[in-house]
Amino acid sequence: MLDFLNSLIVPVLHYKESDQYNSIFKEISENYCYENFHSDILAYYLKRPIVKKYFIDWLNHRTVNNKSPILFEDYQFGEVFRERGRIDLLIFSNDKNSAIIVENKSNDASD
Image (cartoon, one colour):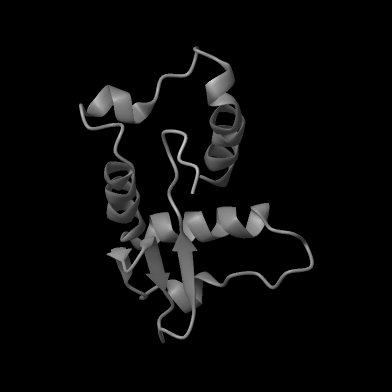
């Protein structure tokens, strides 16, 4: 799974430079241009422990080496929320003392 997520990096980083990559969101919904839709899909999957585990593994793989790793065990039973305040995705740790915050950007959003 980690290899799969890493394989998505290049297309995601360069999708605006090429017309060879179709957006999965365009393929599955008329509402693809809404970042709320994207966040809904992410939240849906991140509520599943195995997906959350692979996501945390991917985050750890992408972070700078001198940072402490995020431990899946700390987030395994943590809740996933959509639109909590102005936060697109909020993944609480089990004890709610820490969180992973995801700001979902799409459609050339400048903020």
